[in-house]
Image: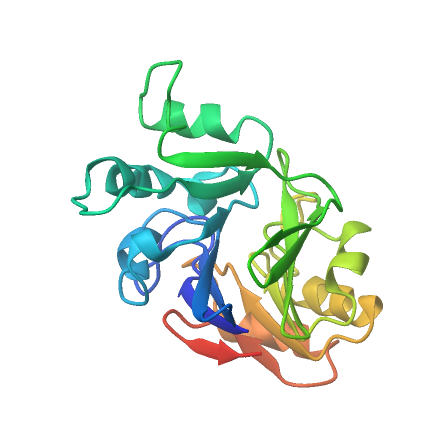
Amino acid sequence: MRLTVVGCSGSLPGPGSPASCYLVQAEHEGRTWNLVLDLGNGALGALHRHIGPKAIDAVLLSHLHADHCLDLCGLYVVQKHGPTTVPRARILVYGPLHTAERMARAYDLTPPDGMHREFDFRLLADRHCFRIGPFTVTPHRVDHPGEAYGLRVEADGEVLAYTGDTDTCDGLNALLRNATLVLADSAFVDGRDEVQGIHLSGRRAARAAVDAGGVRRLMLTHLPPWNDPEVCRAQAAAVWPGEVELAEPDAIYEL
């Protein structure tokens, strides 16, 4: 299984990165399968550097804030208007309740069709796993405004655990346990951001990974442009016993 960080800026695109988007790939049945975790604003253009949009097998939206979903509108345009010589297949899109209606509204589409001719919308549900090619995906409900999920992706005997946006919560234990790599929200800084129920800090992300048990690698992501990444890393390093990694746009990691 291979992870490509397409965008890792938190809350909005930053000067060096789009908002949240991660490409997960694995070989299966003679071809590469492409899973996209979140498609935040600015991410679709950067994704072109790694795969063509028509090669996407599925998009998984952890929640419906703009920095995690808004570029689905651009993918809709590719699906609807991009030239092709073969019949166009709908792309699987998994998301919270009302994802189809919310995304249609974002593009100012009128009912009843919305984006249903371009996408096959399906619902995420807490701990209800499903398969896409070589991937087994298990959503875990997390603590963030609105309906939000962390996503546990398993393939080739490895586990990627993506927290999405969350504060400390019980759902993180099963999400992170024995993960090969935890991709953790680290938007908040201890001593600066005290509001609860929105984001992790580096320290809280590290504590969640330690408490879950069996995590091999911890990578911080979703850092907004105003954060100093090294401050987030240092706060995590005070808890995490190994190296604390920072997600970098266009970086590719083998799991």
